[in-house]
Image (cartoon, rainbow, N blue to C red):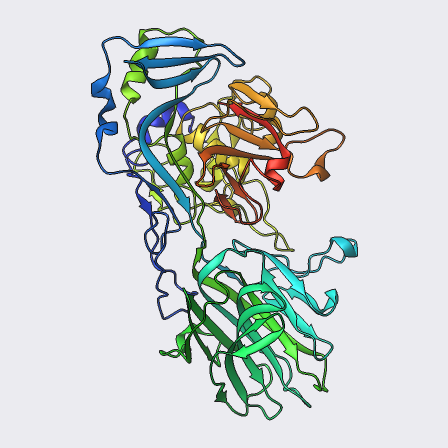
Length: 588
């Protein structure tokens, strides 16, 4: 049984995880799939991101803030700020150097200004699920479900029963002619995108043609761009790029005949690369990227839709006589993309953790710790939290109980259930594929299914427990000395102090909120039985470029830790799910 108590681990990983510089967390150019032959080039990005980077923590050029320790006076002044909870402000020469909270271990110190930013991450949907779930009432059924990491699918046009998923294939049944059927991913902020789909029809149409296309810049079923393949009654396949604005369709180039005599069931790949106003498209009769043509069939420019969703559109033209014709989609993927405005947070707050909770007594021991932290750019709580976002590089422990195990790097949420939803249950040690002996003496083994995964509470425990040394419990713990396993228990029993809580009707104002605080939510009222149950936890990051309070958390729709708005805004302000369901703010 491994002896992996956190108390023995800090020194062991100091030379590996803690020494990693936090600059742009860039990733190598995405490869389209396991059989891909071509590298997809990343797009130039904004908000301080390098081309291809999915997330970043950037520091300013060397300036005086890096050397604040040299400016400290011989004596630091400590002033108690009354309130609930009480806080102590530490200053030198009239300038704040630290803010401590009575009863908590986290300390906020001013330092070099950092920018945290996240961009759209690549994803592949290979439809490994079965939908709809016929055991659910019809009004609760999902027909294409969720694309892991890409967002949830919206299906419009025709009847609900025209859409389904079996393992390895999303299906659209064209049961009536003259009616477009659309499946789009709920993410309308995509600008630049490199997207492809692989699909086939089960019949050669009779009477009139059938078509399928990749949609992008999608605003609605009535307004979008699409690269479309038309399958004619004589077996020919034509390719075109077009835009539809309020139901008026404009061809953006002359249609091309790509093949003749094409049999039913032949898989066709469509690839679109849209960068700024330039649209490039190609298509080929194969599911393999090995067979991708070198050149583009279309290269046009159009500024109509600056951003929008991506997805698919299928149609049996009016007069098609051998319905139903079924489109089978085996793969839908985005290899590179940008959001119009990637979420970003910039401030100079650094969040560090004391060896013990601050009891309100300012003494030489505490002062020495604070002096050592002033101006330091060693990774803090926010840096560790950012090191699990999309694109974060892997870091492996070089020695100690976690030797050879990945302790930092992009995390996902969990593995899939039969309906394609992500299971909860990935704790910090399962991310590392490591058994763990907790401070309460309980041992929990690894899980091969959860390697590289972190659910919301596992993510919080990874940051504050594993990397920053706050004791943890294996499960529920009511002592207030250890971080419990689940958010529903953290809300009352996590170590530290409560900052604010809902009055039962309104979310808390959280006037004393500061970076590093835990934010806990009752996001799903369906599990409130018989009382309100907190079911989500995140880490407050700071004010974003729009002046909104933004947090980090691990989420199912995004498939891992995020500060983004995919599947719900990561904000404590506004009318979003999390803003409305904030329950408690807690300081470790």
